[in-house]
Image: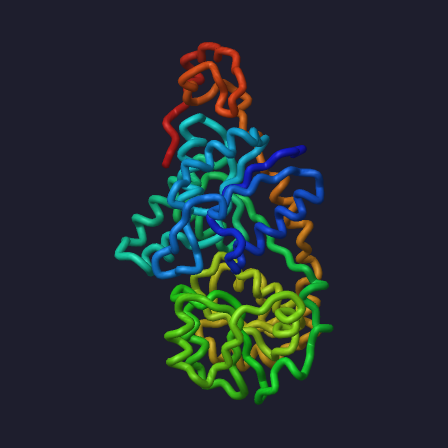
Length: 374
C-alpha cells in the first residue's frame, strides 16, 4: 500500500541491544527514507519497570496511554511487533474497534515465559495465538519457523519476511590481527547472554584456541564465573563490532529457541563460517560445507565449519539485501480502517481517531461476521 503514516508498536526498542531492536530500527530508517512518517510506540514514553530476571529490558506499566498517541497520530496502518504490555494492550483496543492491523513474530514468547516463570508452555501459546489471531498478516523471518507456527496454529495469514544484512558494515575488510591477540582459532559468539540462548553448550566445548563472547545479559555474571578461560568483551558497536566479527575464525550459534538470528547473516557477511545446532533460521541459511555446518553435535559442527571457505561464506549472503526485506514488510501492511462497516460498532458517532463517522448501514443477515478464532 502507498503509506504516509504508520504506527509501529514494539515493547523492544532502544536503548535495548538485540536482534529485534536492530531489525526494527533499520526498518524505520528505510520507511522514513521512502517518505513514510513512523510513530514508534515503545516503552521509552511510558512509566516502566525492569523485566523480571532481565533488568536491562524495561516494560511499560501504563500501556493504555499508548492509545491516546495512536489516536492523535491517525495512522493509515498499524503494525504490532512484540508480545509485551504495549503489544497486547494495543491489539485488544484494535480488536474491540474492529480495526485492521498486522503483526510479526520475533521471539519465542511462550518459551521465554516458561523459562522464567512457572507457566506451562501451552498457556503461553494460548496468549500467542490470541495475539496474532486477528492480524491480517503475521510476518515471519524464516520458512522453517513459518511451518512450525502453522503446526502450532499461530496466526492465520503467515508471510515470509526475509531478513537482510548491510554487507558494507559487515565486511571481511574489517579483519584486524590486533583485535584478538589470543591463541587461534577464535570461536566467536555475539548476542544476548540469557538462559534461552543455551550459551553454556558452546562454552563447555573442548575446542582448541580461544572462545570469545561479545554481548551482555542477565546470565553473564554466572557464566563468567563458571568459564573463566572464556574472553568476555561485553557490548561492541560500529566498526569495533564489525572488526570483532571479521577477525574471528568461526561463529558459534548454540541457541535452539531462535526465530532467526540476524547475527548469522552478519557473521557470514564478515566472511565468517557458522557452526550451529538445528533451529529455525540456521536450518534455512547454513549450507553444510559452504558457509558453515549444522548438527545436534555442536562440537562436530564447529570442527567442520572452521574449515569452510571465508570467501564462500561471504558469497552466500549476496542476495540477502536489507531493502528487499523492507519492501516485503511494506507490501503486506493493510489500511487500519476497514472497507466494510465495523465488526463492532463504535459507541458514538465519533471514529476511533476522533473524526465524525457516518452512521453505518444495517448489515444484511447473510453477511454477519462469524465468531473469529482466538
